[in-house]
Image (tube, rainbow, N blue to C red; front, side, top):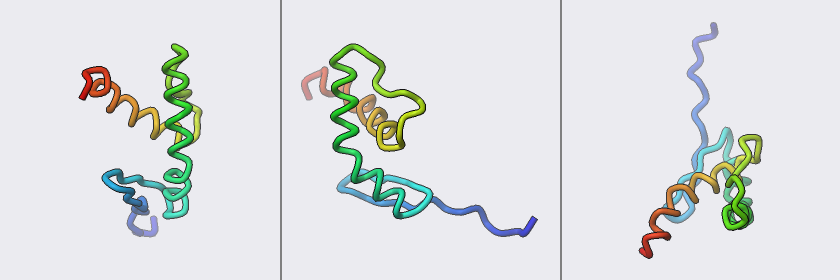
Length: 78
């Protein structure tokens, strides 16, 4: 063992959302892909299918988690 500290994920904050990635470039890629990923999740939900496949891209998994957190508020009309 080399005794090196484990790598700390890079974080990118977009508005009130913080995205973590293995690198700043990965976090930026997720942030850039997020709008389209949210649209895909919404389309899947409205079609009655699963919001995201576990093997999906990081952006799709992040979008599905955002959807899960926001959906109850949207349904309540907030």
